[in-house]
Image 1: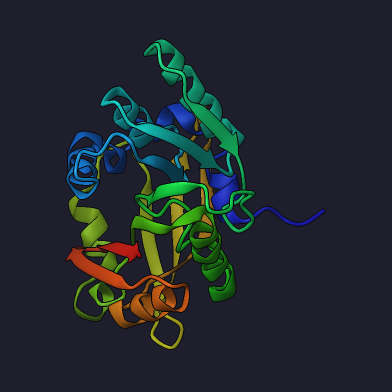
Image 2: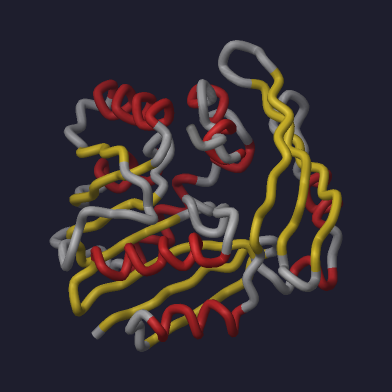
Length: 242
């Protein structure tokens, strides 16, 4: 049996606590941004990659959009289904690995917010498989909106200082041990307390991407118009196929 990766262990029995973490509190504003990018077109068929507990999927469904949520963690998906039921919503939440999606030419839009898989994989090739599978799932004319870790940020700022500024007692903590300039990978120790009150200490390895890399990767997959914006530790990317 293959050893579980840190991102698999992290999200086991963590769904309730996940929803209370500070980094999940921006759902309304994030969905406001997404709606503008979608031009408020409720005819679009959308897939949410790495939907977690369904915060974007549920909010956009409330606003009248047709959206399917997929995630690797059954624990997070179960929480998403419970929340949808509580809100009287029928949403298709499916367990899939974003590196191996079963869809082809199916969706008008893909969203992948707050590092919903990419760029958490242990190799660059695996991260690229996520982008490739998203591209395969989209129609020939479509849009892909996602966020990723901003490779320019650690060149000028401290990752630890960034996380310390937003730290809330009882929430997840991050301790960056080494940002490798040769690979643009941050090796850190993440501590979280799960839904049973058990503390998990995880050795994590996350890939940061600079804009030129993202542009090249998306153009390789047929995206023709690519726009990026940076907000601190993260970059937001919009890629269009046409």
